[in-house]
Length: 199
View (cartoon, rainbow, N blue to C red):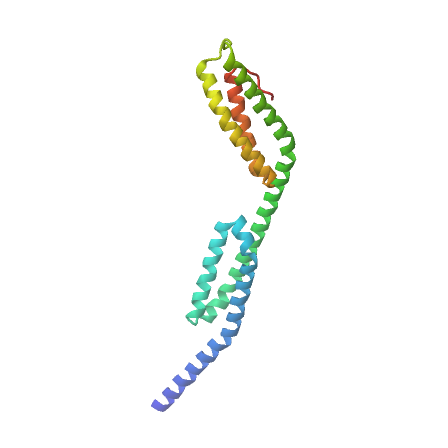
């Protein structure tokens, strides 16, 4: 009876080992597929959806841990969810990329008219500051307003140079953001000097 029990235990162990080994191949393949899929998506995901990439990396790390512990069945069971997550990651990165490209194209189209308009505002403000610095201040314009406009003008010129450099390097999104900031500040300064900014 004892011999029979030992034989039965040995047989069960052998079946378990064979069962585990039959799962090892598919588990290895699933892990390789997931790794290859994530590697292919990584650069784009890092650029456009880094927070989502972190979650998928954690899933892959968890499955690798199961593989190292010999839980091949767990790897095979969890692999489809990981592959879905990788597919969603690729889709999200592609959507963000399309969005970013559309925003860049719009900013590029807007840059020409915006740059001409903002440059004109900066030039008019510069002339007004120079004129007011030489003569008597008109009604409603204070010395403090003129002093603020002088220092503000230097800052505007610096920001405008940054916007122009950004456009020259092809980063029209940044260029437009800086141009808008310059326009807003120039408008404020022009009003303080009794000027009527262009719409």
